[in-house]
Length: 117
Image 1 (cartoon, rainbow, N blue to C red):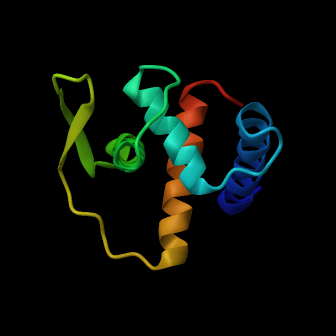
Image 2: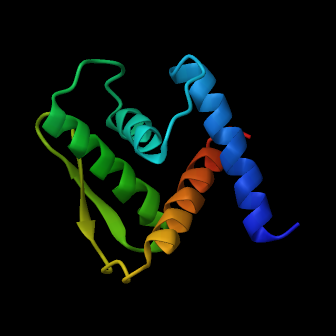
Image 3: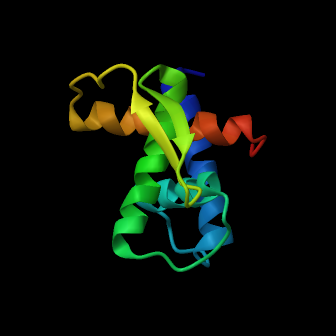
């Protein structure tokens, strides 16, 4: 099986499981999954977040996901317990399709490390 096929199978499995668990079966998109990862990484459990906090949660998720790729590094937790990351290497200029593949690979890797599959 090719790397591309393996990613597709794992991605579809991940989306299906998360959609059942968190969206009553409605299909979650990448942004929704990033939001869930951000909430997980914040570690404060379920709560109502303001719009800017939701954006910050997605940023936390992206930093966490791209940390193993050498783009970000955890820096510190602020006084409110929110994690902050610093840029280690600038992200390369990627076409939209390449960006999608990178983030999906990173999400699958994140959940694989949690023994999700």
